[in-house]
Image (cartoon, rainbow, N blue to C red):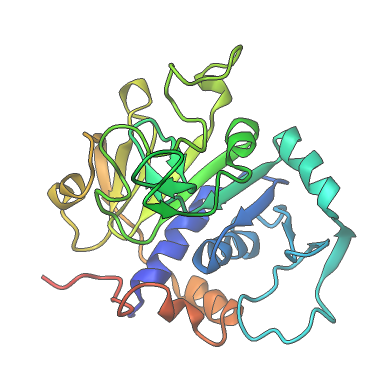
Length: 263
């Protein structure tokens, strides 16, 4: 059975939502959206998802091939104001793609380099990251694992709360921060190392631990047993193809590499 790296990452990221029950899953980007949809179709049927407009769905929409919202599996209305009610209640898990992540799990989607008033590169702005990071669970999806993303020191602009005691809001503790998984093109990580250190828990087929550390700007913890990231099953690949019939996933990673790296 052959599969792409994108499909491997989708399946690995879908495990972030296992056994969560009735939470709103938000996948930012095509592959994260596929991951959340796959979880809803397999390991967590109680999960909720929107059509990205105003309805809750009992069955996720495909990420490609849709020409109309007619006939989608609407379960309830979920307007913009109700999204905020859901966010603040904590009943949400977002799978997001930050531009930078530091050793604390703080992220940056706002600007790169220069100064705060005159950055070298202007990005999205902080948007909802501050509130999201302190209100509900988050996981990170990183298509290219490198020291440009996993930076030494703090992020150029700190957009989200992480496990940095010097930046916790007054009255909050690490128990109020919930960063579940970090999925990259090299490995899967979490923040269950000593003192909430980022920790490698699985390596993608053909990837060595030294390569992961070399492409990270800070020291990583390593799980006692580092597994090989599980290959997609036939069922998972069939569902992914159904959710992405035009194979847009093949365009998300440069050159669409295979999921098993050759020696």
